[in-house]
Structure formats: structure tokens, C-alpha cells
Image (cartoon, rainbow, N blue to C red; front, side, top):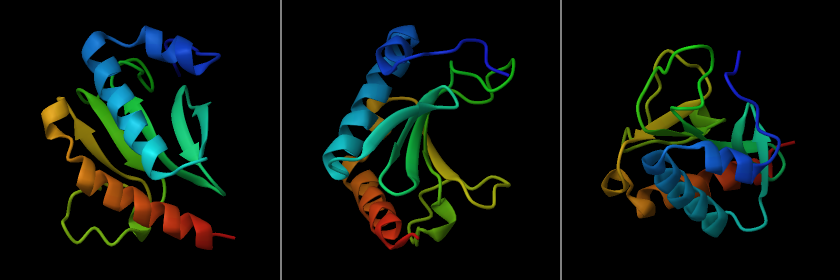
Length: 130
């Protein structure tokens, strides 16, 4: 299923190509600033962030699920994306029922304010989770 296996976060970060590493570290900083004291854990070979349940993940394209890359850049996903209001239609839904995401190919594409608003909403929904 995976081409590589990471035992710890630093090993994951060191594996990434330069551009994906820059994007990943920037997105990670936004998550850690917006959801203080969240748990960061490698799951499915990429970092997931949780409080009660998984809230979001950062999935660089070079960490494949299977043999081939299916997108470019870094995917930022919300595990309960279907519960988010998404009035801006900011998130990609594909044919997924639950997980929604946004792909980033450059730092300029990341609007930290919008992403923080979505993260804040997702964290609020997580607080209500049973």
C-alpha cells in the first residue's frame, strides 16, 4: 500500500521534496497555532491532528497511497469535512462522502485566515463530538 513507512514525524519531514516540505511545515504551523494542544500523530504515514477525534491531516503527494501520485503539492484534509458549513465552497469534495480537502501547490495559494476559520469550525465540532 505505501512505498515507505515512517516511524516518527521528523523522518516523514526529512523524506519530503523541498517544495512539499515547505508547504507541509507552513500548514503544520497553522494547525498548531489554531488548535493549541492538539495531538499530532502519524497515521496512514502522514500527520493527523486530533483532540477527541481526528480533525485534519496533511498529505504530501510524494507520500502515495498505492503506487502512483494522484495529485500534485500537498493535500490538507478535514476528516469530518462534510460537517463544515463551507459557504465559500473552498473545499474539494470529489466523490467523497465525509473527507473534504484543499490541495496546495505553492505558499501563495494558502490563505491562512480562511484555513484558520475552517480549522476553528472543525475544532468546535470536535468539542461537541461524543
